Amino acid sequence: MLASSADIPPFNNPLRLAADIGGTFTDIVAFDEVNNRLLLGKSLSTPHAMVEGIEAGVTKAGTHFSESSLFLHGSTVAINTMLERTGAKTALVTTRGFRDVYEIGRINRPDAYNLFFQKHLPLVPRRYCFEVTERLFADGRFTHSEYTADYDGNQAMVLGSRGLMLPVFLKRIDQRTVVASYTKDLMVVATSRRVVSGDGQTMTITTESKDSSGKLVTTVAVFVRQK
Image 1 (cartoon, rainbow, N blue to C red):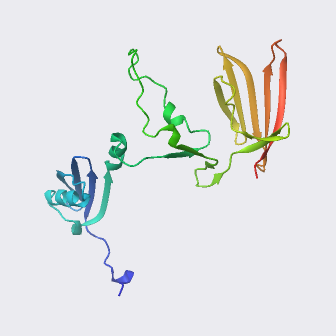
Image 2 (image 1 turned 30 degrees about the horizontal axis):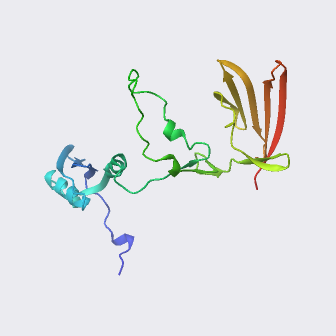
Image 3 (image 1 turned 180 degrees about the vertical axis):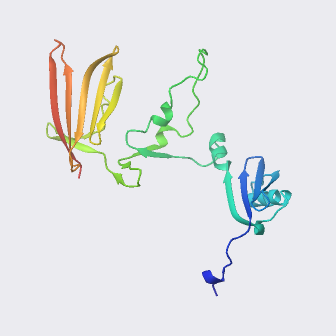
């Protein structure tokens, strides 16, 4: 018969336990709240059964699980497996448009004056990076961010200005408006203002640029959210 919540004694033990499972050692920290003592234990990690390394460390710390009211644990086993490339194949799922962010990184050179410097191979190859057409808000809600447009009678996906190979600087004006400035030789050569309607069903893009004669050309396009 299962015990009811009333039959379970409250956790009023004064000890807190924490374990950090590393590739070589397992570290245990126990804090005695009553006597304000910190107890430490270190043991060899046991990859075949990680709990055995924890139990050995708790014993070396001079305490026991039954004396604790809280147990926390963490492990570097997963990240070590990725770094050593010894685990299963790993995929990365990200918001559409961010597939290359992981591989680009910060575009810095740790060894700036080494002419033979090469970036490390990414832990997840690009072919295993997949895009999802949605964006996640801070409160957990998500929204689809893809729109379609009618070009010469053909439906075309709007995924950003991938065809325009110019540096772009984005500035958010408000919740529904983003302005993109494209530069060449440190000069702004085109601007694109994207405004999403209040109901989120349409997006208007107004682009201003100069033609070969220097004349200002303004283009306005309205996109409808894909059903």
